[in-house]
Each structure stands twice: as structure tokens, then as C-alpha cells.
Amino acid sequence: MTDYTTFEHDVLVIGAGGAGLRAAIEASAAGVSVGLICKSLLGKAHTVMAEGGMAAAMGNVDDRDNWRVHFSDTMRGGQYVNNWRMAELHAKEAPERVRELEAWGAVFDRTKDGKILQRNFGGHRYPRLAHVGDRTGLELIRTLQDHGIHQGIDVHMEVTVISLLKDGDRVVGVLAYEREHGRFRVFKAKAVVLATGGVGRAFKITSNSWEGTGDGHALAYHAGAELIDMEFIQFHPTGMVWPPSVRGILVTEGVRGEGGILTNSEGKRFMFDDIPPLYKDQTASDPEEGWRYTQGDKTANRPPELLTRDHVARCINREVKAGRGSPHGGVYLDIAWIKEKLPNAAEHIKKKLPSMYHQFMQLANLDITTTPMEVGPTTHYIMGGIRVDADTQASTLPGLYACGECASGINGANRLGGNSLSDLIVFGKRAGEYAAQFAQQNGHGSIDNGQIERETKRALEPFDREGGDNPFVVQHDLQDMMQAKVGIVRVEEEMQEALAGLRGLKDRAEKCSVTGNIDYNPGWHTALDLRNLLTVSEAITRSAIERKESRGGQFREDYPNKEPEFAKFNIAVKEVNGEMQISHVPLPEMPAELKAVIEEMG
Ligand code: FAD
Image 1 (tube, rainbow, N blue to C red):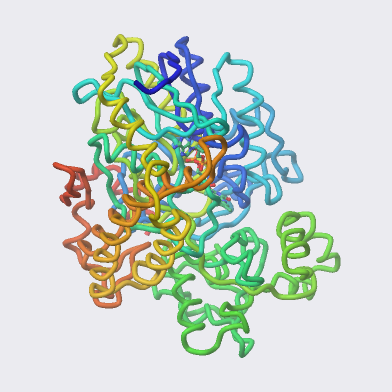
Image 2: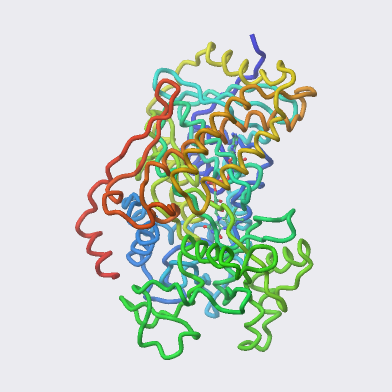
């Protein structure tokens, strides 16, 4: 029998980013006991890295903004395969959630008349992103932590969940290990909320930290839950490309929101070649000054650099492939040019983009107030994830809820920048509320000791093997392959090769070995992460093969057009007898009043 310590909570939240913290706060406010687990230290989640802001139609900068415009922007960004109910709830509830953060102590940037300041971002019709310079995620986490700390939540830091425990179909707890000493812990819970973030580490070039290994996606999948939309990966157009050690680190869209322009090696502002006809104002006298929506509001001037992320990323890719890139394989992002318009431009840039200024100074020895940056696409966000009910965030398994980046639905084929932070607080709250309700209505399930034995044995196997692959090498090979074959531009043949490659990598992962002892052993931790990375990589590849069209975050060179047939369903994957099974989940009919909103917005 393996040794383990047992803990018991009514609601157990896995992940202490914005979504997990918000869920834990809400569940605790409902009067149930709450445990919160995170695999690093509290406060070190991905959310802390978020820079640009959170989208909420408060209309503080442009009073024409409201939930209807936000809803229709989100649906357009998602190319109409979003869960419309989630997009509706998000647009309606985000302003209240942002004001709630303010009441809990968040210090947002201000308009001259003292309201929360909002900035422009890609795909949002009006300035909509509430922000704190370029450190919005840090302020979000700080506020939620400060508030949550007084709610009696039990926090388990540096604890990694490796399995969901089940009683029949119901999820009744989790198995985890402590990073420091490798000891196992069993958590019994009446309801479990997954809030584990994204999957960026499945790719070579990514803005995600070491934590983004798709754990929640894989845990839910192996417990029998459905994942949807896994083919939709957001490649953010602007990551650092130089020096090599920092490749992929994000350069916030806030740079373009503050006036940054993209140019190629010929000095051309190439995004002007790519404004879709829907947006182009044929009557604009000076195209260099901006462009306008021809449908709807004619006065909204927007630079073409703020078209949706998938579009801008592909344009950059095209410039580089055509030999018009920068020396290190990117293009130029220039914010320094605003000095032509603004006398105190350098101070303005340092004030509005302090992290970007320091990031380039310290990592690339480059002053962004005087010199253009070199940037290129980086794997940033996954739209796909655990299939949930829009109102309650319940997964397809009883007792299991999901929110934040590991859940799916709101973003459809592509997420608008800023919609994630607001998603975390809107749906984190809902997940916490409904998980608490489930816990109040159901007792603890029974824990299957056989499952614990099997899972702990599987976890320890890498120590028993000798001569297998080093897990870091397997991880590296996986990232290389996913980047090359299932990246920003996809074709059937390469993705079939990736599937075959995944089978080989899975075999190597199952035989990999680690040395040293169980106390803080990063090789062992990586060996355990591999299963998750391989699961999400297979889900991404199979779903991308199944979607024979290009839409949002999926661009297929062999099927470059959008096909109406594929707008009717989401692609789902589920584990059946140990194999990944694909199915189509029909999109429910949108109610007439929401259709009318979309038509009204053009
Ligand atoms: P995370 O914040 O990623 O937190 C995940 C949590 O789960 C962590 O606590 C982690 O330790 C824990 N965890 C994971 N696996 C396990 C496990 N097995 N066991 C225990 N715990 C586990 N979005 C915006 O809207 N606006 C922005 O300006 C913006 N900027 C961004 C900038 C960067 C550099 C990045 C990377 C993303 C940005 N995003 C932005 C996206 C947004 O930050 C993320 O989508 C969001 O923060 C995800 O939050 P989350 O709560 O779902 O997960």
C-alpha cells in the first residue's frame, strides 16, 4: 500500500489563477469548506502575466459601448462557433465583475474624470479593456488573493494533481503529489472545479510558462469528460524573436493598442494590404491615418494592426516567408514612431507600457522608446477545452466543473484579446457558485482504493525503469513536432505524420526513466507532465484533421476557405476504451433576439 495523507473539502478547486481564485471565493461565500490546490506558489499562476487588460463593455471611454456590441464582437471574433449563451453571459456580466474587483481594492488606470480607463484592443469595436498599465493580471491576482485570504480558503501550494478519483461516473476527489517531497495526497471533495489554464507548452514557441501543460484538459479527458474545439489554438502575432533564450515571450497587444505599427524589412506597413472588405472604408481620404468600419459605426478609427490575432499572425508569417522579415525571422513593431505626434512620447510609453519597456531593456538590450522591436507569432492560448454548461460550468461528468482557459465555449474559433481575464471572473464566479450548490445537495462519494493504488504505481514507474529516454528530451521532441506539423499553417499530410509521431512519442514516454530520489525532482515532474502534453497534442491534431476548413485559430492550407457545414457543430473528443473518439456536437439554435443583435451590429 502506498502512503498518502487524506484531506477533505466540500469544494476543491484545482488551479489558483484568476478563474480558480474567483471560483474559490464564490464557493466559500456560499458557506461550504473550500480547498485550493496549485502546482506552484500562490500568486504565480499564468494570470499574473496578463498585460493588456480585461474586456468589459462599461462605456467609460466611448459611451456607445454596451453588452450588445461586446456580444457581437465576441461572436464575430469566434466566427460564430462560440457557445452563444456563454458569450451573452460574459458580455452582460463582465462590467459588474470588474466593478466588484474595484470594490475589493483593484487600482485601475483612470480617465480624466475618474472612471476606470479602457483601451483599444484587437477586434473590439470600442475602447473596452480595463487595465493597470501593462500589469493588469498582476493586479487581478493581487486583488483576488487579498480578498480570498479572508474567506477561510485552505490553500495547498506546490501540489500537483495527477488523477481525478471517481465513484461510478461521479468525480469525488483527486490524487496529487507534493513537489517538494514527492509524497502523495488524496483529496476527498463533494465537487471539484478545474481551473488549470492552458496548453502552450505542447509547442516549441510559446508565451506560456512551464505550468501550461494542459493538466486539467487531460485529467478531465482521462476521467471520461468531453473536450471540444481543441483544434482552435491562438497564435499571438507578437512574441519576442530575439535573443533565442527569450523567443516566444509575449509582447502585449497593448503596444498596438497604444499606437504601435507593424512594418516589414522594406519599411512597409504591410497590414494595410490585408483589411477585409467588410471593414474597409473605401471613402477614407488618408488610409495611413486609419480605417473605419463601413458597417455600423463610421467614426470608429482603428489601425489595421488591431485586426483579429489569427489574421495578423498569418500576415506576419506571410511577410517572413516572402523574405521581407527582420534579421531574426520576425517583423518590426514600432511604438517609438509616436514621437512624431506626441512631444513626451518616451515618458508616455514608459508610463503605459512599463513592463514592455523593462522586458526589452533587460532581455534584449533594446530601448522601445527609440527603436522598433523584432516580433513574430507565438503559441498563446487555447480556445478549446472541457465542454461545460454555459450557466453552471458543469462538465459532462457529475461533480466536475471547469472554468477559465481549461474550459471551452465562449471564444469559438478565436478569442479576442482581453476576453480571457473577464472570462475568468465571470465564469469563475459561476463555477464556484454551482459547485457549492452541488456540494450542498450531495454527500461525499466513496473513494476507490484500487484506483489510488493503480495511479500511484503508474506515477512511480519512471523510477523503476533504467535506460529509457530522458523525459526532457521527449518533451523537447514533442514541442518541435507540434510546432512544425500542427502549427500556424496546417495540412493533412503533415498532421497525419504528427499522429504517427505522437504514437512513437507516447511509446517513449511510457518507457522513459528518471534518476535521483523523489524529493524535488524536476525530471520526474516532467515525466508526469508528458502524459498530459501527449493527450492534448493528440486532441489538437485529431480535431484539426477533422475540421476540413479554415476558421479562426485553425488555418489549413489544403482547405483555405470557411465552409458553412463546419459552422453547425463543435468537434468533440472523448476517451472510449482507451482510444480517442471524435464526434460532432451540434451548436444550439441562437434565439431570435440575439440574432437581431448581431444583425443590428453589422
Ligand atoms: P492560469 O492563470 O494559467 O492558472 C492555472 C493554475 O492552475 C495555476 O495556479 C497552476 O499552478 C494550476 N495548475 C495547473 N495544473 C495543475 C495541476 N495538475 N495541479 C495543481 N494545480 C495545477 N488575457 C487577457 O484577457 N488579457 C491580457 O492582457 C492577457 N495577457 C496575457 C499575457 C500573457 C503573457 C499570457 C501568457 C496570457 C495572457 N492572457 C491575457 C491570457 C490569460 O492570462 C490566461 O488565459 C488566463 O490568465 C488563464 O487563467 P486561468 O485562471 O484559467 O489559468
